[in-house]
Image (cartoon, rainbow, N blue to C red; front, side, top):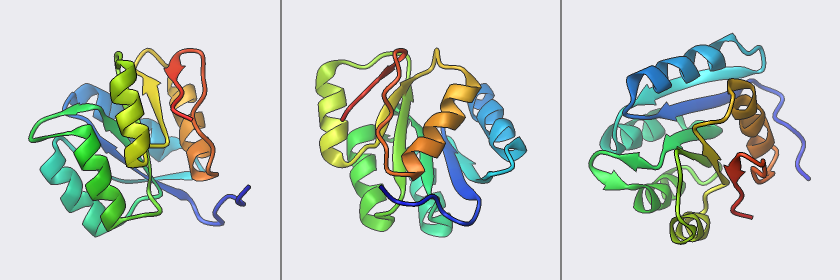
Length: 140
């Protein structure tokens, strides 16, 4: 297992629901071991953010304007192979979960998760672990 980074974990949030994005951004910025790398509301802006910031972890809504999550994960990991992508959503079918995993996604976390669960998932993902919570889909 990899050692955690010695610097603050840089986290980007991609979600077209502004309230979700702002709450996650606020929570990330208050955590002493995390740093907000930026936010975006669609796949086009997400790629701009990735190319500029190269975050350690990306929290991304699985349904975004201007693209689908599987293709976006592939693009992100071509540009920034060390970024760990965690999809956020209300629900996902097994096919989507399998395609996301095949594209390199680190996990799928339900939007019914608590903020502490989300931050815990970020910390786990940066250590190379797969998200595996009862209220989330595991795609290991």
